[in-house]
Length: 551
Image 1: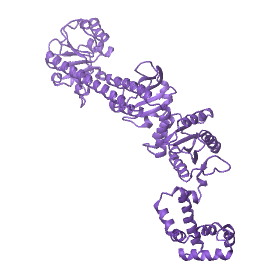
Image 2: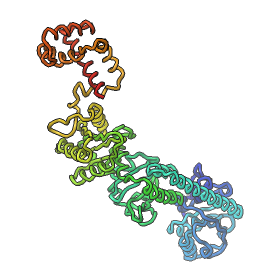
Image 3: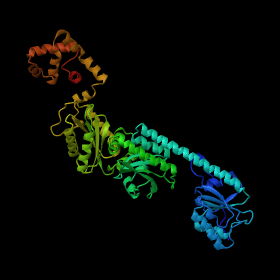
Image 4: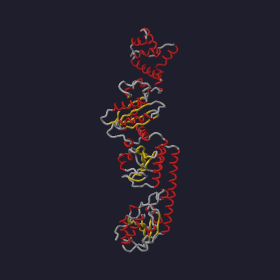
């Protein structure tokens, strides 16, 4: 006898109306319907398999109902045709299981008042859900309700599939880039979607229900464990749904749709449709957008680092590691290459990629803004950074002789690279075109920024312009009205650090004339040129004026 008490079916989920969710109803959904709930259903076996989809309902009083089934049916019976002998019962259950029946529901009203032990044991052995009904149920009404539910879910699924096709057609017609396509796939599927290349580097990741860190940590190792297939399929230890992505007839990458954390397999036909349409849209996008997507991925990662647009340092590390950049036990250095307005950096970007690969230096290279390239090499702990910066700057200047190369300071944490990028950007802002290179290298760095270059970087600041005018305006006006050149005389004096004899010699003047002119300067500017502070203020103003006039 069966000594295991039957269990009531679990409560139906909030979205048990499967027509609204666009999926076939499950056994649990059907048991929760009022028409069946009125029969007080109890789950005797297969409680963990109530998520099986129900594709039809079949009422039978035959001893061999399996010959009329195609799989996925919920079989309803009063138990009248059930064989008397245990072997017959096992054969009955075996046939239902082999044809793929979703569950067996038996009414305990007419022939039986408790499920036969042979039936319980056979269903438990084959993993077939067995449900008993304690009260009389109108089986015809059950079929009508469930079939309406199934047909409704099928119609809704067709409408949802049509919306998916329309959405991706719209993306293709407006020339959407790969980021937009992958983002749309994640939004429509509610799953994280990752685009990788053949080297198992994650080029794009659009998380849904998880973080970039959760999606991409140890990406290459996890991706290699999921063998690539030639079709859309579920596979690998984590049960990813994957689809190949082709370009000009050759496979160049793969899309992966990830399972939500803590959930089992749950990909339906719509997920497959989304992923396959995503692959098609990406193929078209690659034909439209000439920039290699590896470069696009590098650019996106660099901009997130430089502008600190990532959600967390952990997300940034996971994204960069998935692109092949070592993030542990490494040092980082931001290098910027300013090509100038209107300059095309595609050729230089590709050349720098090649140069870094040939030298075995992992790095991200990409355009940060029009005319400005960013490079972020990952250096080994004992590897000096200056030879790397020198090599990259010489490569850049070889292809773009008018370019300006700057380097920030070295950092040991990827999260601090934004500071290195800011420093390199400040150096560029303080370096005018034509600025001579230091004698020992072909790039500029922060210690090179002197007063003149600092004021050059601030030349657009109205406060600097106002200060210059207040300190020197009256002297310039006097020179303009009287045709004198007192501003030049003041410059010789300040450049000579207040040495009147040296200033007179540089200006080709006698000492008496120099003294006379300096007294006039003191009167016009209402200042004491013997004061160190006064001379410093005028020297800063005069340097700023020279910078402003040099534009």
